[in-house]
Image 1 (tube, rainbow, N blue to C red):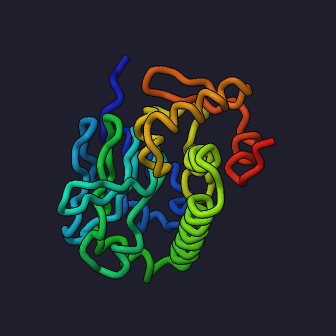
Image 2: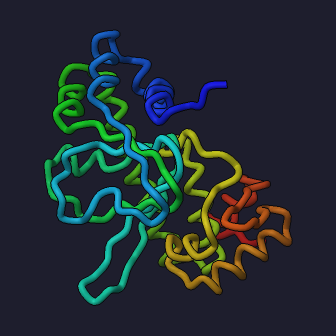
Amino acid sequence: MLAVTPADKLRRFLEASAWMQSLTPEQAERVQRDTLARSFDTGAMVCARGAPSAHWIGVVEGMLKVETVTAGGKSASFIGVPSGAWVGEGSVIKGELRPYDIVAIRDSIVAYMPRATFLWLMQENHHFSRWLIDQLNARLGHFIAMVQSLRLNDTNAQVAYCLASLFNQDLYPGSRSQLAISQEEIGRLSGVSRQIANRALHEMQDKGIVRIGYGSIEVLDLPALQAIAAGNNE
């Protein structure tokens, strides 16, 4: 049996992207030709803060996080990006320097679509442009909900929101029930300590909402998780 190569995985990833279905054969061929894949080990830098936004980033396999680190060494993680998702379209559209780092949480294969190809698609295919508008709107809604959770809800809800947000089908259509993410990373993405994240996750496990594994968390009851994320801890 032949092994599946990164090039094969990239092709399948692109073919599975929702916006790909609206492209003409010629447009799809250019996307396949121009987009490249690279493999990264856990902890590797995928894109550095301050670098040109020369590519749109897709997660073929694995998981990434978006974070920033201050000059004093303090770090803040904003979102996790699971396989099947794209990230960084805002910076690519504006042509600005990356305002954040993108780091591999797990061994990952990452797609790089050149900015020129991305902008060409925006101009040539209105279905792709419409999809991008929906994507940006979904991302804005996600960040508004995240700020609301951080300001109004308790730490259990913050941890639940971090997990539940990874199942946003508009942003992360490829999410599976079992996530390859550590409790420490959940804490960082939730803005709480590892100990607080651990306590919240074990409480949810006791309720049959999640199952904690080594370096992974399986969501067993997504509606219940979403209810806690919304501040309903009953």
